[in-house]
Length: 207
Image: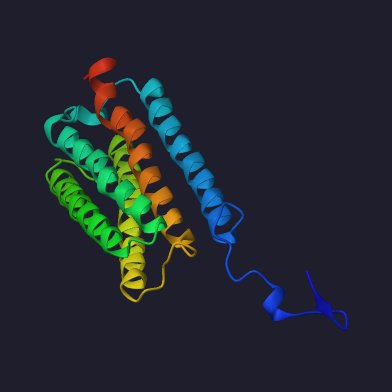
């Protein structure tokens, strides 16, 4: 790298890191590791509470039905398909396909959010009902906050794409958005098992 009079010249600096060495990419990897740790702690709390409680669910709460959560899980998984396509096309400079894929994925994600808000507004208990309600609502709320953050982040990417910010040589923002999208989807699977399937696999206690 050339220097003039011991001073590094601006034209000698890299304009953009478009790979896994980019600070943005490394930052999002670190964030995902932290978030995965938090989700693991929440799942552990759920099962510790289950093991130490004489009845489960506590207070005569009925175990959750599987229909709506399973539909929601299918929607969330399906959203990864257009998101992956958008990510792949966007990295190659196809911003039109990037926008189509992200908008399609967003529609599916918003449908998932609507389903979850409907489900928990009719749950028959709240976060303040008892310890079971608290841990369930906290876990669900924590994940939904990530889904909402994903929606907002994707809107920012769409606006940047509409303004021509991205290109084949500048796509790290597209990459990190896709990375976060798939994290939000994948982390839902152990939550689906914990909040719903575990009641049917391990049964109910007491009551």
